[in-house]
Image 1 (cartoon, one colour):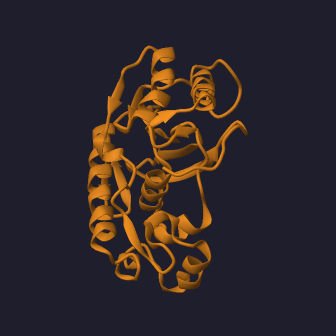
Image 2 (cartoon, helix red, strand yellow):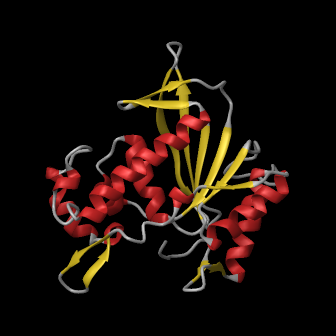
Length: 230
């Protein structure tokens, strides 16, 4: 299976909509996924999923319409709007926007299992939110035919499936860290996803029927992206 985790196109905040540029980016994504241009992917999709946020739904809608598919809403793929941590200067800030230099200073103490026990990520909203995201993500993947067992997945579906989830920057990095078994704060510290960025994760099944997700492309864009939040 090829899983495309796609950040919505350029947003118009606080209206939860797309800018004119965002609509152009969304149309460009649709063209790529339909085989209308070279670039990220031209192999089509089997399913199109989206966060319920309007900015994600509008982005997904272009691709779904061009491919003759329905947009299937996944409520668990919302941006991490309740994931706030204490901040000396601001009082609090989104957990995925904690100062990167500060995160790197804490890096030696992080591992995939224990990072939620380290301040400032031991806040209940973060610890419990991550556990909930993992459970809901596992449920989503099980419906695609990939059932988690520890750090690998038992494959129950035929190969070749291609699905896209249109979502948000903080959410996408967070789920990717879980899929790849990387301490989440390190991914937050080292990477950002621009509007309309596409991250590709491949689940390659071995002869024994097990798969481990591998990221083969992170945050690909056509160069028209820009900075932004979720």
